[in-house]
Image 1 (tube, rainbow, N blue to C red):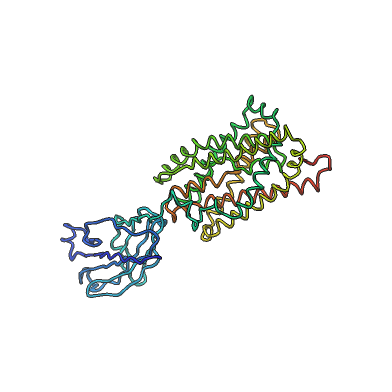
Image 2: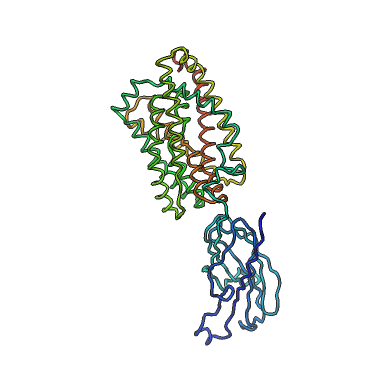
Length: 454
């Protein structure tokens, strides 16, 4: 339950009486309380008020025995402290009081810009005094980020989503089927000429984070959202990469290898990227990369795919059944992934702002075009170009989400998690649209002998 904190800060404005006095001291003096403190603490996720008083001496200005004035307050970091409204609570003697309603957001420090305005009739307000050296520190709440993934009420608890449990058997069988699609000759060729693998690492861990940083600055995203976008674009390729490669006529063996390699590289690249761009953005939180989750992702890819390769070698009949199931299972997983992402992120995305949506929607598009362009410059064949494009454009957003949830308190983590959710929804929706367009083109524009089959 939110609490109401009243931070009584008396703000005194004293006007000098004559020009001789002005030579000795400034005309206005601005103090909060007794002036001994420049910083005030405020609890996270609470509403409260600041009581501001202005006091002046009668006859401070010739011809004006009474000044009509008001106070204007603005937070210089709205993510930490937002100013809701300013109301005049009346005058007592020579003092006027104003109530500033505020709301605290993510933990941090927010300087306040406080202005005393002289309201003259038929002319713009005149700033009598302005100060920005008073700040409010928002203290973090009591929830523990390290245990938040075990909290059944948390948005971040994607591992307990019932839809995920329903999809797990399909995911495992589908990965086994992909193991049956692995071509050993292609695998050996990649070891001799790993150009596509190197292109994937370059695009995923160097160019994509740089794009996210530049985009966040271009659309002026807040620091937390900017960091969430950068971490998302620093994540390795998602498990859906080889699924899309299959459906769009890419190189499935290359896709599997690229996903495995990028997941291994992510163990070192994500901490470096997080530290560097966190420093550029001025976000000094210690980011926790989920190494256990990265290892789990590797095992969950490698084990069923290796099992599928063994089935292909020893049980060709079973291999044929798995290959027949790979396409329908893939469609079910795409649709289920979209539904699960919307369900998990509905409350996080309830107050999402248009710039965040715009930035998230462009990430998969830029990644796809980047991978396609690099593959073309490297002289790769069409199936390899498609695969590099898909692997660069489709990130493992769940890893980025885990970084956000493990690194920040709940309010700030959920706020920063808007970026991974938007990118996840955008990439899945856009790839589904590409798959449907590809199939429609095959059905309507190509002769039967030119259509891709499994």
